[in-house]
Amino acid sequence: MIQKLNKIVLACLLVLVMVSCNSSPSLQEYYVNNAENADFIALDLPVSLLNLENVDLTTAQKEALNSLKKLNVLAFRKTLDNDMAYKQEKEKVSAILKGKDFIELMKLNSGFGKGVIKYVGDDDAIDEVIIYADRQDKGFALVRVLGRDMNPANLMQLLQALQKSNYKGEGLEGIQKLLTESLD
Figure 1 (cartoon, helix red, strand yellow):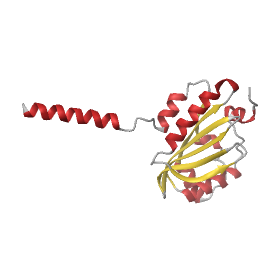
Figure 2 (tube, rainbow, N blue to C red; figure 1 turned 30 degrees about the vertical axis):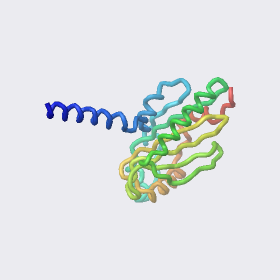
Figure 3 (spheres, rainbow, N blue to C red; figure 1 turned 90 degrees about the vertical axis):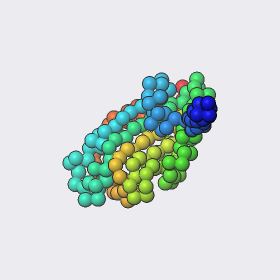
Figure 4 (cartoon, rainbow, N blue to C red; figure 1 turned 120 degrees about the horizontal axis):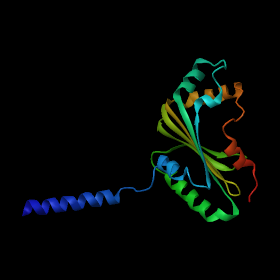
């Protein structure tokens, strides 16, 4: 009888622990859950899209390029009809990015709006860089730069390499449309 009672108590504790765990979605789950949502534009971009194959790169720039896997872009296009959804989605993203795994690298104040750059991983081996930018009249964009042991110093090298390339934004037409169209 005592063993049965112990098993019941253990089962109840296990259920309690599972229920009390954080049930908020991960950033990956957020992307997947909204990829088909009409309010969002979702793009998965290969690194090859950056057109760096024929550019004369330094060793550090090659190392930075080789550490990249792909870019995931998810953008919410705000209209007059989806203002409430925009506010709800913005709150969801903010809650996810406040998680302990996301380390703030810097704040942004760009032509698109205000935002933040965060990363996941160690200071010398970043696995993911997240760029979030929001503009009240346009919407928000969330970019995940996925890689393998990316070095923060090498990321700056990669930006310099991009300046050498002939990349003109091919593959980003949906995001460009989001940024340039006026509010419906």
